[in-house]
Length: 388
Image (cartoon, rainbow, N blue to C red; front, side):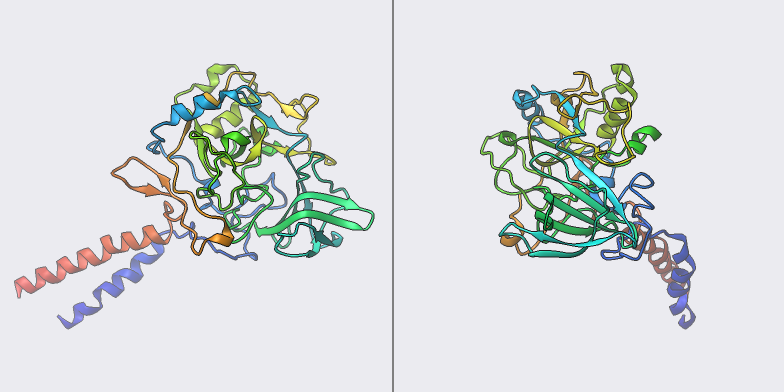
């Protein structure tokens, strides 16, 4: 029997290489390029595979009991319930930097900012913020794999300034966990953003970001995966930032007669959904703003004089969506001591899935080791003992 004591070890070492661990997130990992954008955002989706933005909605996702009541209440929006895409205005210009890009110190002016100056930010010469009041601007450094996000950015005679600025690794989940981002929800600016090459290729492999009128955005804190909130509505049917909505998967998108870009975006809203990220005006999903860039939308997303694309041609309304089960609201960073994990609720015997329970990786590996190694070994030992 003494020889059997080593049997579990040998079986563990023999079987270990058979199990993947690819979804185990490196929380810092700035030197790694496994999940980050390659040369630019059109080559690969940003952020880790475990990011809530990169997790598909399962067929058994749990829906809010009053989902229909919530979305039917939202037809009184500035867009009369219609969904549209923000492109040329009220969206996010993205510029790419490398080691040769000039560096600037950016003055951060809001009194509640986490720093007074962001030092050494790589800003290309052609970089400009969105022209509207939010003045969003995003810089992606392809060498360090850092994303720099700005709110109300401005290139003044004395240098670059912004009301708020922060940076995040492209090897993270794309969500600021300990302080505020440039969106009300704490989502990175490229998280959920639609890019031209995705539409051209006919597939968007991530959730979208979405904003709506302030009176539909609930006060009292965000719900995960959001980490902050500027919601201020006390309406009973208002939803908190971080809420995930899904275009009803029963809808036959191909039968709607949408332009090709509309089909691609609608399919993504069925497969991945969209996260409420901010206050806005009407029901808007966000596409990359091509201002001052050669990477334009061309005829893919035609826009009106307000920089808006009505690509869904009044054939998709907010009432065509369902609201996934909403988790508990959480305080803002300065008021909390812990941050709960994101949970994607399902109806399968009360089980849950989410970024903390990947479909492969260490969690599955350990579980399979227990089943394949430990259980058979115990049975073998008990059998041999009985024979003896």
